[in-house]
Image 1 (cartoon, rainbow, N blue to C red):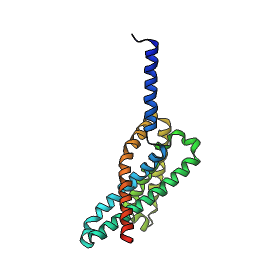
Image 2 (cartoon, one colour):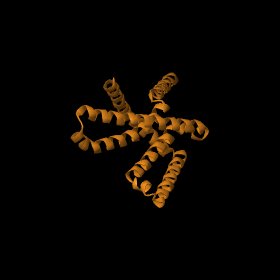
Image 3 (tube, one colour):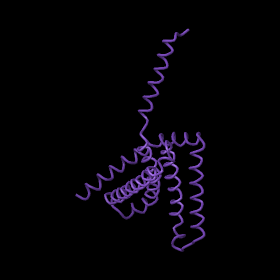
Image 4 (tube, rainbow, N blue to C red):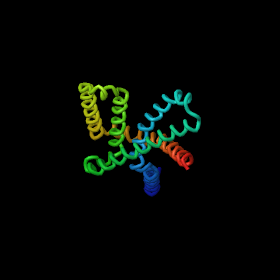
Length: 192
């Protein structure tokens, strides 16, 4: 049977492990950036891989790498712009968003990315000024975004799932950022 001092040392050990885990989790700004980077870069890679067969026929390897590098640079700049907008929105809504910053930013960035992908795939809606499909697109976007944010703030399991999802996906986002840095180096070398 454990004595009081042994039980308190076990409790201290558990507290120390928990504190170390909280220190080792990525900070919230990084997770927000990672959640913005992921959908933007996934869509960039989808578009790159869709166009590569045509580019291979027309471009040299150096030109092909340059086009890919510029695409990734644009994705990085787009990610940074969206991150800045989410940071400002998070700062303005700090009282309402509170500790659920990462889940909130993940929901906003992923839903917005999905809805703009839908718009990109249906660009003829804009070209033809199709008001009804655009209105449906906008209303469903606002409805889904509002519902998701409401669920994040009311359902603890959804909040925890999104937080866990963000932490797991941050590694892949870091890989995308690393490839972006390689692309920037290629652009600098190519233009110098």
